[in-house]
Amino acid sequence: MFMRLDLSCSGCRQLRLLDRAYQCTLTAGSLDEACGQLLCYSCSRAHSIITSHPCFRVVGLDSRIMAGVIDCPYRYGANLTPANYMKHTRSCNLRGLMCPMAMCRQKPFFWNTLASHLIDHHGFFNENIPYEGYKEDIPLIRCGTGVVLEGQEEYFVFFITETGLYFIWLGDAEAKHDLPSFLLKVHLYQAGSDGRPREELGHYLSPHPTRIMDVIHLCVIPSVANINITQQSFYLRVLIEDRA
Image 1: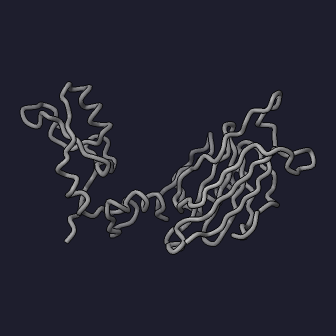
Image 2: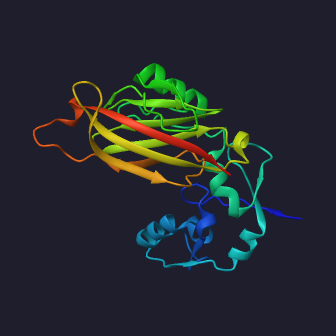
Image 3: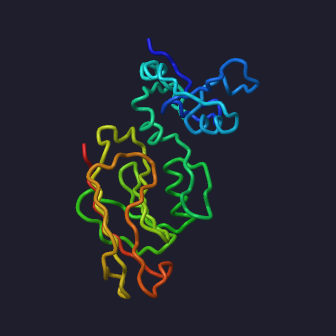
């Protein structure tokens, strides 16, 4: 019988006690309620500074935490072990997502509605991805825009900011439970006046990125003398292959 755990920090109310729990040394005789409660590392540091009470790590909780189960914050009844909690919460298809584009930051979206939002409101191009061979007929993209490559119940999103090229996977990880990772190769080129690649600016290779919904920085776009990056067009070559 597993013990159900509440690993919320008493300070920030976030589920952060999974990564070590702390407690104030003055658990009795204090006027501060937080002195007798469990805190995450960040809140314990703040507590020590404010109260001048040192905090210690509650090592005895480690074995109890690893033997317990945790509820998914987005789905009732999903019993998660501490070992798979972080991966599940980053790939759960009921997780609320924020738009990554600057000056927008709307929320919440689910994975499929965020893809539609990027296409409809931010002008991202929408193309299909074949899962074999390089995708080379991707429309040119500029700083502040991107492309959504649509696969089978998932999207591969690429966008450019003034600092680099970024990637997001959006999808239903449960529909791909037998394919937890994929091969990703991306080449970024500066486009010439004819719209074709002129100079490779960077590339990215990852043989086993997992299907989790996080923003990944793929590569830095080097500065070009006397050229404003916001006025440039870029060309992508993308290869995506499933990996069991």
